[in-house]
Length: 215
Image 1: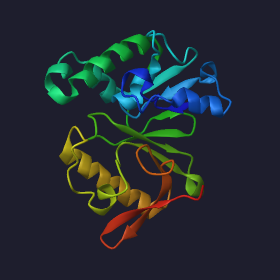
Image 2: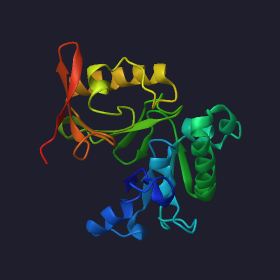
Image 3: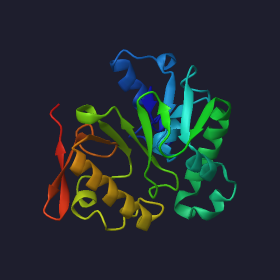
């Protein structure tokens, strides 16, 4: 299974290498049985289609939170998301239409797949989801883009981020997640964090810092 599908070939020249990475691991696209989405931004969703608009993961089921699904499928979103993100809405609608008959929807707290619990982390997008995998000393939080970088997001989690569609809610979510992760010492996987994005959250006075996991 995959968490998110990458950007595919249509977003930017420096992205779209997911299939190369899978090949290096000896995984073919038809071996992917489930794709679980954190949210519908281009670098997380657009990779479901190839250059010919065919499905990349022909054997997969797809899983997206109900709130996130409804947001990107709403025809009003293209007019309300803001000019800088209009292409995001158009591209999301086209790709979600292509996988609609393979889609499973879920809500906060649901067990999406065995051992994988949905954790609402709204703000970066209206229905952004993180996922708690496993438990106890082996717990891992797939954070998606709820914690966007290892600088300001940790040192000043309450500051608004321009990458969040709802900056105020995004800051509240970030603060809550960092507090939870620092307290529980669960591993965090952040998609825009350095060196693979895997690490833990440490308290640093009144704020936090990112401690990369040993690779």
